[in-house]
Image (cartoon, rainbow, N blue to C red; front, top):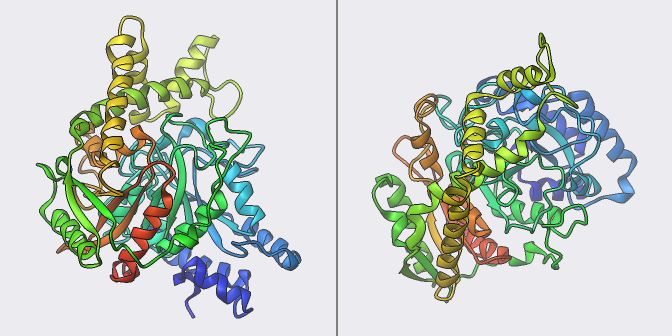
Length: 483
Protein backbone atom coordinates (compact mmCIF):
# COMPACT_ATOMS: atom_id res chain seq x y z
CA UNK A 1 0.00 0.00 0.00
CA UNK A 2 1.25 3.49 -0.90
CA UNK A 3 0.72 5.16 2.47
CA UNK A 4 2.03 8.50 1.21
CA UNK A 5 -1.03 8.86 -1.02
CA UNK A 6 -3.56 8.60 1.81
CA UNK A 7 -5.41 11.41 3.56
CA UNK A 8 -5.02 12.09 7.28
CA UNK A 9 -8.40 10.55 8.13
CA UNK A 10 -7.53 7.42 6.12
CA UNK A 11 -4.15 7.12 7.85
CA UNK A 12 -5.69 7.71 11.24
CA UNK A 13 -8.12 4.82 10.69
CA UNK A 14 -5.26 2.50 9.67
CA UNK A 15 -3.15 3.50 12.66
CA UNK A 16 -6.09 3.13 15.08
CA UNK A 17 -6.74 -0.39 13.71
CA UNK A 18 -2.99 -1.14 13.97
CA UNK A 19 -2.81 -1.85 10.25
CA UNK A 20 -0.05 0.77 9.93
CA UNK A 21 2.44 2.34 12.33
CA UNK A 22 3.68 5.96 12.33
CA UNK A 23 7.18 4.78 11.45
CA UNK A 24 5.86 2.94 8.37
CA UNK A 25 4.09 6.08 7.22
CA UNK A 26 7.23 8.13 7.69
CA UNK A 27 9.49 5.65 5.88
CA UNK A 28 7.07 5.66 2.93
CA UNK A 29 7.15 9.47 2.85
CA UNK A 30 10.96 9.48 3.05
CA UNK A 31 11.04 7.46 -0.17
CA UNK A 32 8.50 9.74 -1.82
CA UNK A 33 10.46 12.87 -0.87
CA UNK A 34 13.69 11.36 -2.19
CA UNK A 35 11.95 10.56 -5.49
CA UNK A 36 10.25 13.91 -6.02
CA UNK A 37 11.79 16.83 -4.13
CA UNK A 38 14.76 17.22 -6.45
CA UNK A 39 12.15 18.22 -9.04
CA UNK A 40 9.60 20.04 -6.91
CA UNK A 41 11.90 21.64 -4.31
CA UNK A 42 9.04 22.13 -1.88
CA UNK A 43 11.09 21.57 1.30
CA UNK A 44 13.85 23.78 2.68
CA UNK A 45 14.58 21.85 5.91
CA UNK A 46 14.27 18.08 6.16
CA UNK A 47 15.95 16.26 9.06
CA UNK A 48 15.36 12.50 8.96
CA UNK A 49 16.98 11.89 12.37
CA UNK A 50 14.67 14.38 14.08
CA UNK A 51 11.59 12.87 12.41
CA UNK A 52 12.56 9.32 13.43
CA UNK A 53 13.16 10.54 16.99
CA UNK A 54 9.61 11.91 17.03
CA UNK A 55 8.34 8.49 15.88
CA UNK A 56 10.17 6.77 18.71
CA UNK A 57 8.65 9.15 21.25
CA UNK A 58 5.18 8.42 19.88
CA UNK A 59 5.73 4.67 20.15
CA UNK A 60 6.56 5.13 23.84
CA UNK A 61 3.38 7.17 24.34
CA UNK A 62 0.92 4.75 22.68
CA UNK A 63 -1.52 5.12 25.57
CA UNK A 64 -1.81 8.87 24.97
CA UNK A 65 -2.95 8.87 21.36
CA UNK A 66 -4.03 12.29 20.16
CA UNK A 67 -6.35 13.28 17.32
CA UNK A 68 -3.43 13.42 14.85
CA UNK A 69 -1.39 10.54 16.27
CA UNK A 70 1.33 9.61 13.78
CA UNK A 71 0.13 12.03 11.08
CA UNK A 72 2.97 13.94 9.33
CA UNK A 73 2.68 17.72 8.90
CA UNK A 74 4.91 20.05 6.87
CA UNK A 75 5.31 23.54 8.35
CA UNK A 76 5.77 26.78 6.42
CA UNK A 77 9.19 28.29 7.13
CA UNK A 78 7.75 31.35 8.94
CA UNK A 79 6.17 29.33 11.78
CA UNK A 80 8.49 28.76 14.75
CA UNK A 81 9.46 25.21 15.67
CA UNK A 82 11.72 24.99 18.71
CA UNK A 83 15.30 24.09 17.85
CA UNK A 84 14.72 23.98 14.09
CA UNK A 85 15.90 26.57 11.57
CA UNK A 86 13.08 29.04 10.92
CA UNK A 87 14.29 31.52 8.33
CA UNK A 88 11.24 32.83 6.44
CA UNK A 89 13.30 31.66 3.45
CA UNK A 90 15.44 34.77 3.88
CA UNK A 91 19.20 35.09 4.16
CA UNK A 92 18.81 37.57 7.00
CA UNK A 93 17.47 34.84 9.32
CA UNK A 94 20.06 32.25 8.34
CA UNK A 95 20.72 29.91 11.25
CA UNK A 96 17.95 31.28 13.48
CA UNK A 97 16.50 28.55 15.72
CA UNK A 98 13.56 29.66 17.87
CA UNK A 99 13.76 28.82 21.59
CA UNK A 100 10.01 28.05 21.63
CA UNK A 101 7.21 26.49 19.57
CA UNK A 102 4.44 28.50 17.95
CA UNK A 103 1.08 27.83 19.61
CA UNK A 104 -0.16 25.86 16.59
CA UNK A 105 2.99 23.68 16.76
CA UNK A 106 2.41 23.05 20.49
CA UNK A 107 -1.14 21.94 19.70
CA UNK A 108 0.00 19.67 16.86
CA UNK A 109 2.56 18.00 19.11
CA UNK A 110 0.00 17.58 21.91
CA UNK A 111 -2.21 15.68 19.47
CA UNK A 112 0.59 13.37 18.34
CA UNK A 113 1.36 14.92 14.95
CA UNK A 114 4.85 14.49 13.48
CA UNK A 115 6.62 17.65 12.32
CA UNK A 116 8.01 16.32 9.04
CA UNK A 117 9.82 19.25 7.44
CA UNK A 118 9.88 22.99 6.80
CA UNK A 119 8.32 24.17 3.54
CA UNK A 120 9.83 26.70 1.15
CA UNK A 121 8.08 30.05 0.73
CA UNK A 122 8.43 33.51 -0.74
CA UNK A 123 10.86 35.49 1.42
CA UNK A 124 8.98 36.77 4.49
CA UNK A 125 5.77 35.75 2.64
CA UNK A 126 6.36 38.57 0.14
CA UNK A 127 5.20 37.06 -3.13
CA UNK A 128 2.62 35.15 -5.13
CA UNK A 129 4.85 32.62 -6.87
CA UNK A 130 7.38 31.11 -4.39
CA UNK A 131 10.21 32.55 -6.48
CA UNK A 132 11.64 35.06 -3.98
CA UNK A 133 13.04 32.45 -1.56
CA UNK A 134 16.74 32.47 -0.75
CA UNK A 135 16.60 28.70 -1.35
CA UNK A 136 15.43 29.14 -4.94
CA UNK A 137 11.96 28.63 -6.46
CA UNK A 138 9.55 25.80 -5.77
CA UNK A 139 8.02 24.10 -8.83
CA UNK A 140 4.37 23.22 -9.44
CA UNK A 141 3.97 19.40 -9.37
CA UNK A 142 1.45 19.59 -12.23
CA UNK A 143 4.00 21.29 -14.51
CA UNK A 144 7.55 21.71 -13.23
CA UNK A 145 8.08 24.75 -15.48
CA UNK A 146 5.36 26.64 -13.61
CA UNK A 147 5.04 28.32 -10.23
CA UNK A 148 3.08 26.68 -7.39
CA UNK A 149 1.70 30.02 -6.18
CA UNK A 150 2.74 31.86 -3.08
CA UNK A 151 3.69 32.63 -0.56
CA UNK A 152 2.85 29.18 0.88
CA UNK A 153 4.00 27.56 -2.36
CA UNK A 154 6.17 24.94 -0.68
CA UNK A 155 3.32 23.79 1.59
CA UNK A 156 0.86 23.52 -1.33
CA UNK A 157 3.36 21.77 -3.61
CA UNK A 158 4.31 19.28 -0.87
CA UNK A 159 0.66 18.29 -0.39
CA UNK A 160 0.01 18.08 -4.15
CA UNK A 161 3.14 15.95 -4.69
CA UNK A 162 2.17 13.57 -1.82
CA UNK A 163 5.33 14.52 0.09
CA UNK A 164 3.24 15.06 3.21
CA UNK A 165 -0.23 14.30 4.50
CA UNK A 166 -0.97 17.73 5.99
CA UNK A 167 0.65 21.16 5.82
CA UNK A 168 0.39 24.53 7.53
CA UNK A 169 0.69 27.83 5.71
CA UNK A 170 0.01 31.46 6.45
CA UNK A 171 -2.32 33.78 4.55
CA UNK A 172 -1.88 37.57 4.47
CA UNK A 173 -3.45 38.34 1.09
CA UNK A 174 -4.17 34.91 -0.37
CA UNK A 175 -0.99 33.03 0.49
CA UNK A 176 -2.80 29.80 1.44
CA UNK A 177 -5.72 29.92 -1.01
CA UNK A 178 -3.89 31.01 -4.17
CA UNK A 179 -1.22 28.24 -4.08
CA UNK A 180 -3.91 25.74 -3.06
CA UNK A 181 -5.90 26.73 -6.13
CA UNK A 182 -2.89 26.55 -8.46
CA UNK A 183 -1.73 23.17 -7.06
CA UNK A 184 -5.15 21.49 -6.92
CA UNK A 185 -5.39 21.05 -3.14
CA UNK A 186 -7.60 22.42 -0.35
CA UNK A 187 -6.49 25.61 1.42
CA UNK A 188 -8.35 27.41 4.21
CA UNK A 189 -7.77 30.93 5.51
CA UNK A 190 -9.57 31.14 8.89
CA UNK A 191 -11.31 34.20 10.31
CA UNK A 192 -8.81 36.69 11.70
CA UNK A 193 -8.47 35.76 15.37
CA UNK A 194 -9.62 32.14 15.06
CA UNK A 195 -6.07 30.69 15.04
CA UNK A 196 -3.27 32.03 17.25
CA UNK A 197 -0.48 33.95 15.51
CA UNK A 198 1.93 33.41 18.41
CA UNK A 199 5.11 32.06 16.87
CA UNK A 200 4.26 33.20 13.34
CA UNK A 201 6.99 35.58 12.17
CA UNK A 202 4.93 38.62 11.26
CA UNK A 203 4.46 40.09 7.80
CA UNK A 204 1.36 42.29 8.35
CA UNK A 205 -0.02 41.75 11.84
CA UNK A 206 -3.60 42.86 11.12
CA UNK A 207 -3.86 40.53 8.10
CA UNK A 208 -1.82 37.37 8.85
CA UNK A 209 -3.54 34.07 9.65
CA UNK A 210 -2.24 30.50 9.93
CA UNK A 211 -4.30 27.82 8.20
CA UNK A 212 -4.33 24.29 6.71
CA UNK A 213 -3.41 22.96 3.27
CA UNK A 214 -4.74 19.44 2.77
CA UNK A 215 -5.73 16.75 0.27
CA UNK A 216 -9.44 17.02 0.99
CA UNK A 217 -11.96 19.03 3.00
CA UNK A 218 -12.28 16.48 5.81
CA UNK A 219 -8.56 16.76 6.53
CA UNK A 220 -8.87 20.56 6.67
CA UNK A 221 -11.63 20.19 9.28
CA UNK A 222 -9.47 17.78 11.34
CA UNK A 223 -6.52 20.17 11.30
CA UNK A 224 -8.67 23.20 12.13
CA UNK A 225 -10.07 21.35 15.16
CA UNK A 226 -6.53 21.10 16.50
CA UNK A 227 -5.07 24.54 15.75
CA UNK A 228 -8.09 26.76 16.49
CA UNK A 229 -8.96 28.44 19.76
CA UNK A 230 -8.06 31.16 22.22
CA UNK A 231 -4.44 31.75 23.23
CA UNK A 232 -3.30 34.03 26.09
CA UNK A 233 -0.07 34.65 24.15
CA UNK A 234 -1.97 36.34 21.30
CA UNK A 235 -4.23 39.23 22.27
CA UNK A 236 -5.83 39.24 18.80
CA UNK A 237 -6.90 35.59 19.14
CA UNK A 238 -10.63 35.60 19.93
CA UNK A 239 -11.90 33.70 22.96
CA UNK A 240 -14.96 32.05 21.41
CA UNK A 241 -15.85 28.34 21.55
CA UNK A 242 -14.39 26.21 18.76
CA UNK A 243 -16.98 23.89 17.22
CA UNK A 244 -16.14 20.39 16.03
CA UNK A 245 -15.67 21.24 12.37
CA UNK A 246 -16.05 17.61 11.32
CA UNK A 247 -19.72 17.93 12.34
CA UNK A 248 -20.10 20.53 9.56
CA UNK A 249 -19.18 18.01 6.85
CA UNK A 250 -22.75 17.71 5.60
CA UNK A 251 -23.65 16.70 2.07
CA UNK A 252 -26.50 19.19 1.97
CA UNK A 253 -26.62 22.70 0.47
CA UNK A 254 -30.37 22.79 -0.14
CA UNK A 255 -31.80 26.28 0.35
CA UNK A 256 -28.46 28.03 0.88
CA UNK A 257 -28.11 31.39 -0.87
CA UNK A 258 -24.82 31.86 -2.74
CA UNK A 259 -23.71 35.31 -3.90
CA UNK A 260 -21.64 35.76 -7.05
CA UNK A 261 -19.93 39.21 -7.17
CA UNK A 262 -20.09 40.68 -10.67
CA UNK A 263 -16.78 42.52 -10.07
CA UNK A 264 -14.93 39.17 -9.91
CA UNK A 265 -16.00 38.17 -13.43
CA UNK A 266 -14.70 41.21 -15.29
CA UNK A 267 -11.71 41.73 -17.62
CA UNK A 268 -8.58 39.78 -16.69
CA UNK A 269 -10.33 36.52 -15.78
CA UNK A 270 -9.10 33.60 -17.89
CA UNK A 271 -11.90 32.04 -19.95
CA UNK A 272 -11.19 28.47 -18.82
CA UNK A 273 -11.07 29.55 -15.17
CA UNK A 274 -14.39 31.34 -15.63
CA UNK A 275 -15.92 28.24 -17.22
CA UNK A 276 -14.69 26.05 -14.37
CA UNK A 277 -16.25 28.32 -11.75
CA UNK A 278 -19.52 28.59 -13.70
CA UNK A 279 -19.74 24.79 -13.89
CA UNK A 280 -19.28 24.67 -10.11
CA UNK A 281 -22.11 27.17 -9.65
CA UNK A 282 -24.38 25.04 -11.85
CA UNK A 283 -23.60 22.03 -9.67
CA UNK A 284 -24.51 23.97 -6.51
CA UNK A 285 -27.81 24.97 -8.16
CA UNK A 286 -28.46 21.35 -9.11
CA UNK A 287 -27.89 20.38 -5.47
CA UNK A 288 -30.52 22.87 -4.32
CA UNK A 289 -28.61 26.07 -3.57
CA UNK A 290 -29.85 29.43 -4.86
CA UNK A 291 -27.30 31.45 -6.84
CA UNK A 292 -27.68 35.21 -7.20
CA UNK A 293 -25.55 38.07 -8.48
CA UNK A 294 -24.27 40.54 -5.88
CA UNK A 295 -22.00 43.57 -5.95
CA UNK A 296 -18.85 44.34 -3.97
CA UNK A 297 -18.31 47.83 -5.38
CA UNK A 298 -15.01 48.66 -3.70
CA UNK A 299 -13.24 45.57 -5.07
CA UNK A 300 -11.35 47.68 -7.61
CA UNK A 301 -9.49 49.43 -4.77
CA UNK A 302 -8.51 46.26 -2.90
CA UNK A 303 -5.08 45.63 -4.45
CA UNK A 304 -3.92 49.23 -4.05
CA UNK A 305 -5.32 49.35 -0.52
CA UNK A 306 -3.65 46.09 0.46
CA UNK A 307 -0.23 47.14 -0.81
CA UNK A 308 -0.34 50.22 1.40
CA UNK A 309 -1.63 48.56 4.59
CA UNK A 310 0.47 45.38 4.21
CA UNK A 311 3.73 47.09 3.27
CA UNK A 312 3.36 49.65 6.06
CA UNK A 313 2.98 46.88 8.62
CA UNK A 314 5.81 44.90 7.01
CA UNK A 315 8.13 47.91 7.21
CA UNK A 316 7.44 48.14 10.94
CA UNK A 317 7.66 44.38 11.60
CA UNK A 318 10.89 43.85 9.66
CA UNK A 319 12.72 46.69 11.41
CA UNK A 320 13.78 44.17 14.07
CA UNK A 321 15.97 42.23 11.63
CA UNK A 322 19.18 44.22 11.85
CA UNK A 323 21.96 41.70 12.55
CA UNK A 324 22.30 42.62 16.21
CA UNK A 325 20.67 39.80 18.18
CA UNK A 326 20.13 36.87 15.79
CA UNK A 327 20.32 35.72 12.21
CA UNK A 328 22.69 37.00 9.54
CA UNK A 329 25.22 39.79 10.14
CA UNK A 330 27.39 41.26 7.38
CA UNK A 331 31.17 41.38 7.77
CA UNK A 332 33.55 44.28 7.19
CA UNK A 333 31.89 47.28 8.84
CA UNK A 334 33.40 50.20 10.72
CA UNK A 335 30.51 51.37 12.88
CA UNK A 336 26.97 50.42 13.93
CA UNK A 337 25.21 52.35 11.16
CA UNK A 338 27.35 50.71 8.50
CA UNK A 339 26.64 47.30 10.04
CA UNK A 340 22.89 47.97 9.79
CA UNK A 341 23.17 49.11 6.17
CA UNK A 342 25.36 46.23 5.01
CA UNK A 343 23.40 43.58 6.91
CA UNK A 344 19.96 44.69 5.71
CA UNK A 345 21.26 45.51 2.24
CA UNK A 346 22.67 42.04 1.63
CA UNK A 347 20.35 40.08 3.96
CA UNK A 348 17.05 41.01 2.33
CA UNK A 349 16.09 40.05 -1.23
CA UNK A 350 14.80 42.49 -3.86
CA UNK A 351 11.08 41.99 -3.19
CA UNK A 352 11.56 42.38 0.57
CA UNK A 353 13.46 45.63 0.01
CA UNK A 354 10.75 46.87 -2.35
CA UNK A 355 8.02 46.31 0.22
CA UNK A 356 10.01 47.79 3.10
CA UNK A 357 10.65 50.94 1.05
CA UNK A 358 6.98 51.21 0.00
CA UNK A 359 5.81 50.78 3.58
CA UNK A 360 8.32 53.18 5.05
CA UNK A 361 7.29 55.80 2.49
CA UNK A 362 3.57 55.33 3.28
CA UNK A 363 4.27 55.82 7.00
CA UNK A 364 6.65 58.74 6.62
CA UNK A 365 5.97 62.27 7.81
CA UNK A 366 3.78 64.16 5.36
CA UNK A 367 2.49 61.01 3.65
CA UNK A 368 0.88 59.10 6.54
CA UNK A 369 -2.53 60.80 6.13
CA UNK A 370 -2.41 60.72 2.34
CA UNK A 371 -1.64 57.01 2.11
CA UNK A 372 -1.89 54.89 5.25
CA UNK A 373 -4.79 56.68 6.95
CA UNK A 374 -6.75 56.80 3.69
CA UNK A 375 -6.04 53.11 3.10
CA UNK A 376 -7.54 52.25 6.50
CA UNK A 377 -10.72 54.13 5.52
CA UNK A 378 -10.95 52.23 2.23
CA UNK A 379 -10.40 48.99 4.14
CA UNK A 380 -13.49 49.81 6.20
CA UNK A 381 -15.50 50.36 3.00
CA UNK A 382 -14.40 46.97 1.65
CA UNK A 383 -15.52 45.28 4.87
CA UNK A 384 -18.86 47.08 4.70
CA UNK A 385 -19.37 45.73 1.18
CA UNK A 386 -19.11 42.19 2.56
CA UNK A 387 -21.34 43.01 5.56
CA UNK A 388 -24.10 44.16 3.18
CA UNK A 389 -23.61 41.16 0.90
CA UNK A 390 -23.97 38.69 3.77
CA UNK A 391 -27.36 40.20 4.60
CA UNK A 392 -28.52 38.74 1.26
CA UNK A 393 -26.55 35.49 1.05
CA UNK A 394 -25.02 32.74 3.20
CA UNK A 395 -21.71 32.57 1.32
CA UNK A 396 -19.92 34.11 -1.66
CA UNK A 397 -18.46 32.13 -4.57
CA UNK A 398 -15.55 33.43 -6.68
CA UNK A 399 -12.52 32.15 -8.60
CA UNK A 400 -9.46 31.74 -6.38
CA UNK A 401 -7.08 33.15 -8.99
CA UNK A 402 -7.71 34.92 -12.32
CA UNK A 403 -5.47 32.44 -14.16
CA UNK A 404 -3.96 29.00 -13.77
CA UNK A 405 -0.30 28.72 -12.72
CA UNK A 406 2.00 30.83 -14.88
CA UNK A 407 5.56 29.94 -15.87
CA UNK A 408 8.53 30.45 -13.56
CA UNK A 409 10.20 33.77 -14.40
CA UNK A 410 7.19 35.06 -16.34
CA UNK A 411 6.23 37.81 -13.86
CA UNK A 412 9.22 38.10 -11.55
CA UNK A 413 10.33 41.36 -13.19
CA UNK A 414 6.79 42.79 -13.36
CA UNK A 415 5.67 43.46 -9.76
CA UNK A 416 2.26 44.85 -10.76
CA UNK A 417 1.37 41.73 -12.78
CA UNK A 418 2.55 39.61 -9.84
CA UNK A 419 0.47 41.59 -7.34
CA UNK A 420 -2.66 41.17 -9.48
CA UNK A 421 -2.37 37.38 -9.04
CA UNK A 422 -4.06 37.88 -5.64
CA UNK A 423 -6.85 40.17 -6.85
CA UNK A 424 -9.61 37.74 -5.76
CA UNK A 425 -8.14 36.84 -2.37
CA UNK A 426 -6.88 40.15 -0.93
CA UNK A 427 -10.30 41.57 0.03
CA UNK A 428 -10.95 38.63 2.35
CA UNK A 429 -7.90 39.50 4.47
CA UNK A 430 -8.75 43.19 4.55
CA UNK A 431 -12.22 42.27 5.87
CA UNK A 432 -10.94 39.57 8.26
CA UNK A 433 -13.19 36.87 6.77
CA UNK A 434 -12.77 33.09 6.44
CA UNK A 435 -12.41 31.60 2.95
CA UNK A 436 -11.50 28.26 1.41
CA UNK A 437 -10.11 27.25 -1.97
CA UNK A 438 -11.04 23.85 -3.39
CA UNK A 439 -10.24 22.25 -6.78
CA UNK A 440 -13.05 22.70 -9.32
CA UNK A 441 -11.50 21.50 -12.57
CA UNK A 442 -8.56 21.61 -14.96
CA UNK A 443 -7.79 23.61 -18.08
CA UNK A 444 -6.80 22.12 -21.45
CA UNK A 445 -3.15 21.91 -20.27
CA UNK A 446 -4.22 19.85 -17.25
CA UNK A 447 -3.52 22.67 -14.78
CA UNK A 448 -5.78 22.98 -11.70
CA UNK A 449 -8.51 25.61 -11.34
CA UNK A 450 -9.45 26.81 -7.85
CA UNK A 451 -12.89 27.75 -6.51
CA UNK A 452 -13.05 30.20 -3.57
CA UNK A 453 -15.87 30.15 -1.03
CA UNK A 454 -16.14 33.11 1.40
CA UNK A 455 -18.25 33.14 4.58
CA UNK A 456 -19.12 35.66 7.33
CA UNK A 457 -16.75 35.98 10.32
CA UNK A 458 -16.38 32.77 12.37
CA UNK A 459 -18.67 30.87 9.95
CA UNK A 460 -16.06 28.29 8.97
CA UNK A 461 -18.81 25.67 9.37
CA UNK A 462 -20.51 27.14 6.29
CA UNK A 463 -17.27 26.81 4.31
CA UNK A 464 -16.90 23.17 5.32
CA UNK A 465 -20.52 22.37 4.51
CA UNK A 466 -20.36 23.86 1.01
CA UNK A 467 -16.88 22.56 0.20
CA UNK A 468 -17.64 19.05 1.46
CA UNK A 469 -20.89 18.89 -0.51
CA UNK A 470 -19.04 19.93 -3.66
CA UNK A 471 -16.39 17.24 -3.06
CA UNK A 472 -19.00 14.52 -2.66
CA UNK A 473 -20.26 15.18 -6.17
CA UNK A 474 -16.93 15.70 -7.97
CA UNK A 475 -13.61 13.91 -8.35
CA UNK A 476 -11.26 16.88 -8.86
CA UNK A 477 -9.69 16.60 -5.40
CA UNK A 478 -8.72 12.96 -6.03
CA UNK A 479 -6.55 13.70 -9.06
CA UNK A 480 -2.79 13.76 -8.53
CA UNK A 481 0.07 14.95 -10.74
CA UNK A 482 2.30 12.36 -12.38
CA UNK A 483 5.83 13.07 -11.20
